[in-house]
Image 1: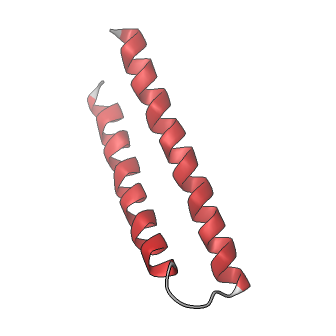
Image 2 (image 1 turned 30 degrees about the vertical axis):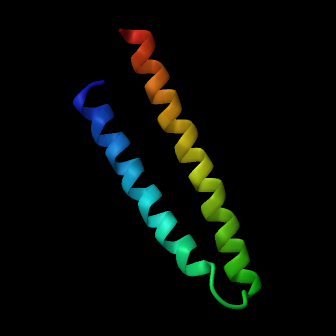
Amino acid sequence: MGNHESEHVLTLLKELSLLKELDDKYEGGPKTQSERDAHRQRQQRHQEIAEEIKALAEQKKNNE
């Protein structure tokens, strides 16, 4: 994996960490509709990031 790809994965991992932190805060107390929507968007983004990291790993594997 090149430097650019490594930096990209690092950025994605940082974003995952932030999403996790926001989701941890979401767990407590009653939710408004906008909070539920934001939670769903974070879950969707989490899935997108996981797929992107998986694709980068697969690309690296295929280039070796």
